[in-house]
Image 1 (spheres, one colour):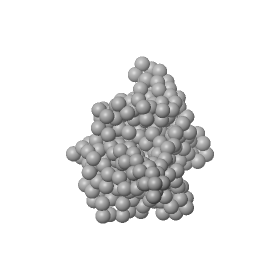
Image 2: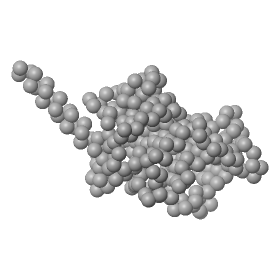
Image 3: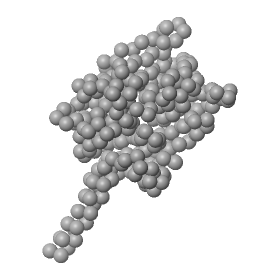
Amino acid sequence: HFYKRIRMAEHHKRRLFQDVTNTELTPAKRQKTQGTENQENISSAIDVQQGGVQHCPYDNLKWRGMGFYRRPRCEYAVYHSLKHNIISMIRLHGWADSGHKSTSKNAFVVAVASGELCVSLLYKRLNLRMGDVIIIPPKTSYSFGSTGSRTCELLMLQCEGGPGMPSQANCFAPYDAARWKNIGENKSDTVQYSRIFRTLGHLRLRMNDYTRLEARVSGQQPLLMYLVEGEVDLRLRGHAGGLTAIKLEKGDCVIIPPKERYEILNRRGRRCEMLQLGLKSLAP
C-alpha cells in the first residue's frame, strides 16, 4: 500500500503538470515563458532573418511529446512565435490522438500537411485529408486523431478571432472543393490559386514545373508562406533595393513583411503547392 500511494501521487503530479502546460497563456504570461521553455524551439527554427524576412526550415524543428504522459506518438514543434501569432506543427503517428483541448479567445487555422485524420469539434466530427483547411473558433473544444497507420502532420496558426471570421458551419474548406483560377500574364493553367475562405486573405497556390510568379504582399499584415509539396526558389526585393534569395523545400515556411515584393521560381521538373496565410488576426 505504501508504494501504491507513491505511484498515485506521481500520477497526480504528472496530470497536474499536463493540465497546466495545455492551458493557453495570456500575452503577458507568454512573454515570460518564451524565454524559458519555447526559446530553444523558436531560436532553432529560424534560419534566415534579413530585412524582416524570416525563414523557418522544417529540418530545424525540435519535436516534443504532448498529451497525457507526454507520449512520443503525438509530438509538436514551434516554427516561430510572434506577438499575435504562434506557428506550430503537430505530428500524429499511427492510431494516435492529441487528447481533448480547448481554445479561449484565440482561434486556430489548421491545415493538413500530410496524411489523414479526424477532428472533433464539440459534437461535430470531420474527416480531414491532405490539403484540407479548418478554422477552430474561440471557446471551442477540439481533438485530433489519426485514422490509420500512416503518420500525419498539421500546420497550426494561432490568431486573434476577428469579426470577419466565418461561422462555425463554414469553417471547413476541403481541398476537393477548391475552385482554381488562372493567374499570370498569359492566363494559362501553369500558375493557379484558390481562395480558402471568402472573407479571409488565405490562398492555395500551385505552380507547374519551370514556372515563375511575381507578386507583392498587399495590406498591412505579414504573409506566411508554407510549402506543402515540391521545391521552389524565393527571391525578395526590399525597399532599399536589396535582393534576398531563399531556397524552400517541403515543410518549410517563410514570413514575408507587408508591402514586400517577392518572386517564386519553380525550376524543378515537378509541380509545387503552397499555402499563403495572412498573419496577425483572422479579420479581413
